[in-house]
Image (cartoon, rainbow, N blue to C red; front, top):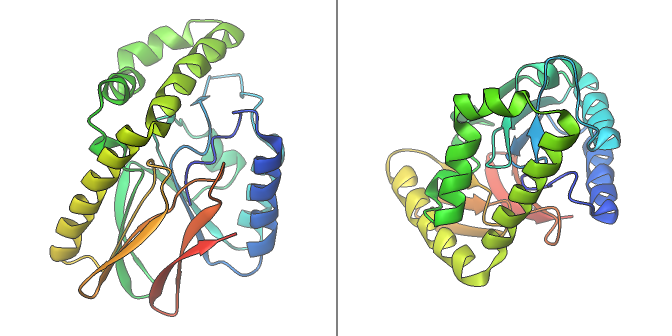
Length: 230
């Protein structure tokens, strides 16, 4: 799943995601969070942002029940420095990864690298700059997080514009087609907030949508990949 955007100020949507986490406890071998779990996230040395604590507690509870949690960086949550691995018992944090899941070769990523819009590219460049990260860490957290959230909201709203979303959607479909032709069985991406599932021969492409409006996720079970609605 992807694009929960915790901290965006949508308590009902967050509650629904919490119900989802509770529902898969004891049933899911793995949970793969494909980016933008947070509207914005930055780990300081001694400060933890006050964002989505109830959801994070449920994720830790899920991990302690035996579900392995894998976290992927999105374009809104880049700065993971180990606290979530320790506090939530997340298995690993990735940018992108190919993994074997239930016998299938699966490519996983957020997908924002395929977004060539000016604002998304600028936002991605700013977020991934180590120099900017250092300078940002020098700001008081109340100031830094407030500023970053305003930029993040603008970036997300640009993504929600129908024309921009359709361009990203087309780029993702073509990328998935190439990955599947190269030997992957399944490609799963997020970022576009447009849930979809397409088959290319024996391969499957799934965009996991979002947890603000669509409440969709991909599932792999018994060697098959499907798009599910909660």
